[in-house]
Image 1 (cartoon, rainbow, N blue to C red):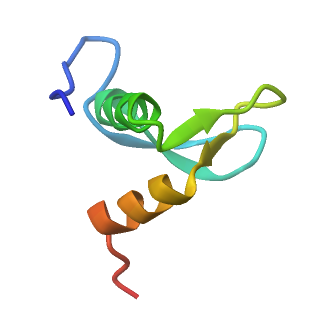
Image 2 (tube, rainbow, N blue to C red; image 1 turned 30 degrees about the horizontal axis):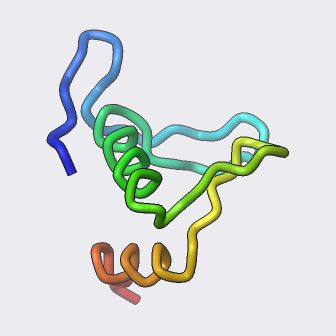
Length: 71
């Protein structure tokens, strides 16, 4: 994954509340870089019907490996 590039318009990292689903997601350069990596590796794909992202089984495994739950 390439390092997120900062810009005057996009912060490095912040939480963003989705206006339609009322759920928070990761925004900013870091969120964009992570999503691009997941899509490029085939771990996730966009849906045609909505703005949702669907993770493949391998993508789900890799996500848990990268971000283990603290629960």
